[in-house]
Length: 399
Ligand code: FEO
Image 1 (cartoon, protein in one colour):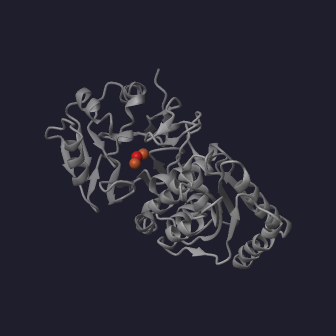
Image 2 (image 1 turned 135 degrees about the horizontal axis):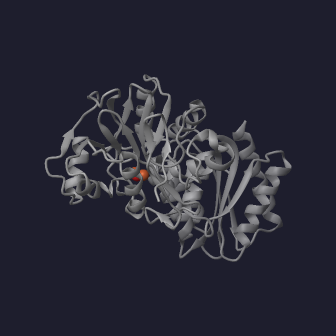
Image 3 (image 1 turned 90 degrees about the horizontal axis):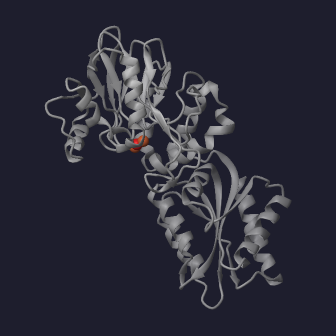
């Protein structure tokens, strides 16, 4: 059965949801599923904006057939070639062989690279090129590295609709609610939107800044991303988040404590610090066990908070492996501008503090507080002064 919604009078959401997939990109857990959005415009010409993941192809085809009725498909605009959106291109070509594929030169190259049989159906476009479908005119805007190099966004100048590809997307299936004002975004969606952004696009902050600059020059009335809700008002809220995330500015002044513990002693030291901070009035403190929390959540929270405490046991004379994985992911995603405090633990040759400091020193604009602490197996009375001094340093640096 088809399941579509009107976005405007003549634009339809023809995407779908996957609530079965465990790991997005086979790496990020998606407990609330994910939507793959695709849009179909009915004008003098019929135009499909992106396709969907293979997993929901059947639903997608039913949706398109329902909206097209007996019309043919004239154009297929491909803003992004990653297979979660592009997997069904060939299927569309088989069903609508006369369709013209509109995409960037790189996207056309990727189609061949992925082995799609696209024949001579491709019209390559570049930034500033325009196309008219009848009442609707669109212009194409390059959006490289959001989140692949071939990406572009398409702006419908007639209705002010921006087809934003991965930008402004979110993890999470749509429970029938398509628009941002049909959900409580701040309560129910922002954490998954942040986790999506930081893990998928987070590395490319400068590119996102470039796109935001271009977007500020156009009159946007609606944002249609490839995942998550469609935005039709309150753009400032989400644009502000994107601006902060892409400049690597923290959203909140607060302390995120991430600990790697084997038998609970490093966790006990982390608890001691958290309690000291809260007793001194710093109540915006969150704690995560690095072994129990998927790194995608840790990354998301790291983009949110201003201060991060890393507490790691020494393991095989190195950083505890899950902690190392988290730090390396932070580095890979280009996180910057955070203040760190370090707690190391070791029973005979503590090393993790020194090694974590070296890794963080290698990252951009990171401040690492001088005061740190070496816990020998377990925190004791004589360690309290050092812990107090870390607590004070954090508080001072928050002023
Ligand atoms: Fe949702 Fe980069 O694909």
